[in-house]
Length: 161
Image 1 (cartoon, rainbow, N blue to C red):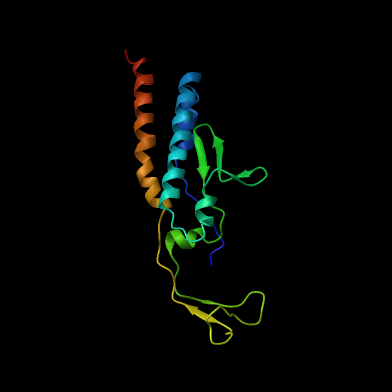
Image 2 (image 1 turned 45 degrees about the vertical axis):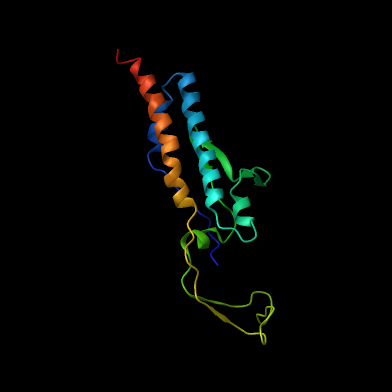
């Protein structure tokens, strides 16, 4: 099982952010609002797409704190937000796993209900990918780009007259 989380990086935001800082306060607030709304839309879409057995992965996508001061959803900088999952198997669900062996961690053998006897190792056949973050990003792109483009068009039109 993977212990890494899912991380999505959008390049170029720092350059755009620096340029947007020169905008009026009202325009900066509007762009920031659009980015926040798009991120929340993304969280909702990812949550709806998320496969669920126990509900733990789906619940980890919500903007509730994992521990004091650490949030799944947080503002990084002007018009930049982050959302993700801290459950250790999030990447396994999103990208799938190759066949692998499972060994006991705390005991000398593995056993489960229905097994004929305890075993030292299990050959896991792997798991197919069940992407939910990637498709949510693709669907939420237009919810960010179109409103931002329209606001920037209105903002810039006052300087082109």
